[in-house]
Image (cartoon, rainbow, N blue to C red):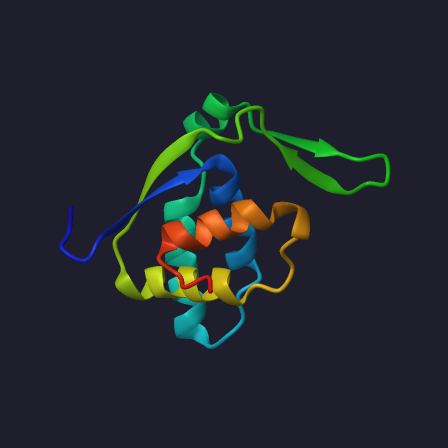
Length: 118
């Protein structure tokens, strides 16, 4: 493992939500590249998806939703670029579309990322 690699133990829900958060990243080219590196590390492989029963479901309204059977499954995720780690933390901390229904899970995620939650 490279010296600057940071390792996180993330649930399925946390990985998927971080991918959603990073997918909305805005900024200059360097910021987008860092977000892309982080997304590459967080992306669920075909094996990961099969392990948790991940599915894409179309709603009657034509929206695409994701569901998985094992939300609490924990994965070890390594992000080798410290600047990519920083964009994950910054993006998760500043994301403004979290749901109050997910408050406990959001707080747990931010703690795992090492983000102050006071």
